[in-house]
Length: 214
Length: 185
Image (cartoon, rainbow over all chains, first blue to last red; front, side):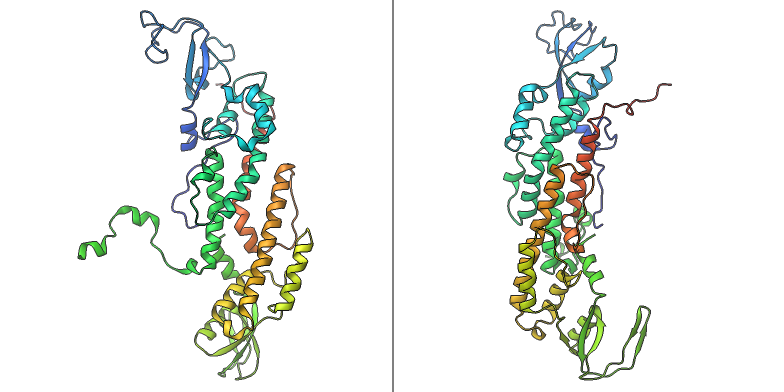
């Protein structure tokens, strides 16, 4: 209610939210793939430049790292252009780690958009899709308790250690929990009825009343 | 909803005061407030009571539940039960804060009362978190929680609804996307 600006949240699930900054950053993450057919004159954009020979076209079958937005665009059900593999964090080995105990994994290091990216991967036809979707859901559920406890109990402390291992979606949740806690504490101390300057006005930098006089 | 808004709603509750001035019946939009005679107790909404107290025109009488033994009983019952016990007032937290801040001289053992109410609050919040956690773990469709007050719901509300939204979206991923086809022209 007192926010001046409501950012558009990420669209979880097969479709991204066009206006969401989180989704835009998320779709920049790269995933591994292979070129199924020769891609003429694209070596400068996509290739690693090393084995491209004359540096002109990407030969068939060479490995590429493509950002998600490009992969989604080039992906075709007839699969002529490129074929995508799963990044290692969504593969079998890591899935068993998540099902064993999801709380120990540092999701920020593993790609800060684990949930969003995983949901997007379900767009590519892949026989492992149901397991991937199930793993993502179970990971979220098991980490929920820890996020709730840490966000609702850490008042006026340095929270960087707590959020270090959370991915972006969980961080947004953590911030929402913290805000609830802070609002309550602030009300209880009686600060809720004190008038404070709005964050927008402070950002304008024009409120230098005392500095100008001095 | 913010805590300040919940406090505003709580100020409609009635509380007994003993005025030291006299005034005839006043007719307000929300209803009539009875004639004020010095020394005779009268029931008024909390917003008026706080205002009169600040102007030193009355003495507040604490509500009957704001008493050490009663609150101890409530606190112990809260600790024993797994479900939420009905609270004496749906705005117990706000009323405690308001009355103890502005009229602590009229309320005996104010500090003890504050501690007891805080203990009860902490127990209830812990129960709420536990039930939210089991709700998420078992992926239930809906839950029913009796006897929760507005302030408690506010503290955890935003977080819980956002988390459940995310969980719902991740759950719809499990269905293969028949409805996610874009239109071909």
